Image 1: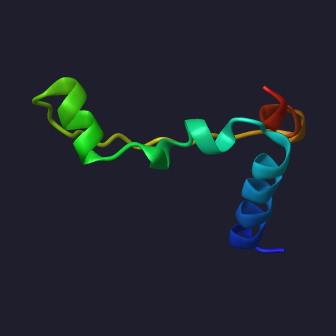
Image 2: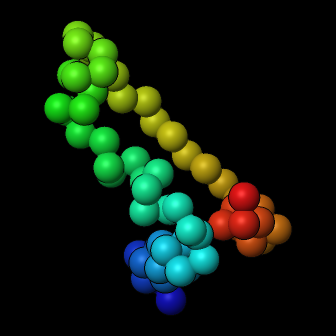
Length: 63
């Protein structure tokens, strides 16, 4: 299984076992929501890498 297939399967697992994954998903926030809440803001991007061992990967969906 390549990494892309793994990520697809992992996301499907989160959707199956997490009762609120769809509600708290970061893709539910858009520019209009930010402008309504913050009025003015600047966008800054930072690299974000998460590394998990097997136990961390197994535990994350349950948190």
